[in-house]
Structures are given as C-alpha cells and as structure tokens.
Image 1 (cartoon, rainbow, N blue to C red):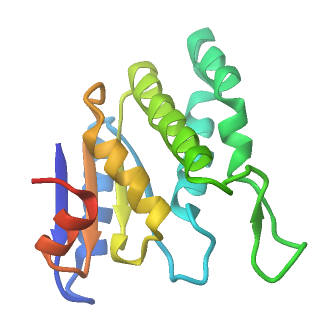
Image 2: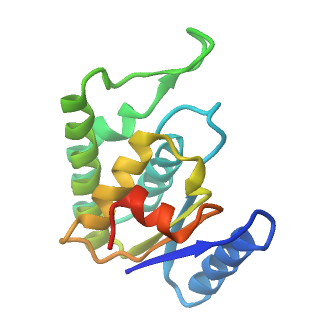
Amino acid sequence: KIVCLIGERGIGKTQLLDEWRRQAQTENILVIGTRCYLKTSPPLEPFRWFMHELKFVLLPRDAKAQELIAKYDYLFSALAYNATAEKEPKFLFDFSSEEKQLEFLSSFVGLVNEAVAVVPFAISIDDIHLAYEMSLQLLRLLTQSRGSCYPLALSSSDSISTVKKELQVP
C-alpha cells in the first residue's frame, strides 16, 4: 500500500499530495502528513512532526488510546531536542549506536502499527529525496512491516529506481 509520486521539482507532487489529503478528509479518512527538509534540519525531523500529530489525534480518544500514549511516552519525548545547546540540535534520546537506533526505530514502527488499530490513518511524506539515512531506515521498516495496514504516500524528485533502492522495495 505504497504510493510514490516521482517527478522533477516544481511539477506539482506536493500539490497532488495536498489534494489527496483534502479529499481523504472529506471522506473522514485521517492522513498524517509530514515532509523531509533540507539537510540542515535534524535527522528524523519529519517524524518529530508525525509524532506530534499522532499524539494530538490520540489524546481525545478512548482509554485504549490513552494506554497507547502512556506505553510509548518515551518515544513521544525521544524526538524532542535541545535546540539551544549548540549549533546543531541534540536529541534527548541517545542515538549513539546502531543498536540504539534500531531499537528506537523498531519501537516507532510498533507504535504506528498499534496506533492504526486505535484510529485508522494514512501517512503522507513529501520530499523523501531530502531524508537523512535514519529517516530512510525508518521508512524501510514501515514499508516492510507486515502488521501494518496504513497507506503510505511518498513524493520525491529522485527516480523511481533510486527510491526503490533507498527503501529496499521490489
């Protein structure tokens, strides 16, 4: 359930994603949209926004949603960062080793899979050609997750073969 919009810069991929989100809203389908930014933004930046939106959507829900927020509270705060400490923001979560990164990313996928059972949603991510490696790794895990039933819409200025290679999908 992956839709990937590929094309040159400026041809309307973002506009098409925005229209898809608006159309989904008219049909009461929740789409959590985010985008990758220039390499000057922190790694996992698109997922910081996604987590903020997901928590906002889950908060007014039932007790099951509240349990999910409590269970994964460390993930919601993990992507917070101290932007005043240095030139480059430092995440409050320790991503110093590949093992810790994979643990975090796997937990993130677990949260998404459990959350979609509480409140069905689709994910839209624009400009994935700007994504850091850790964001691409998270996208790979999301696309390979067998328990998920959420549609995933992506846009990129890269070629389809480059996107498939980056996401490791056939």
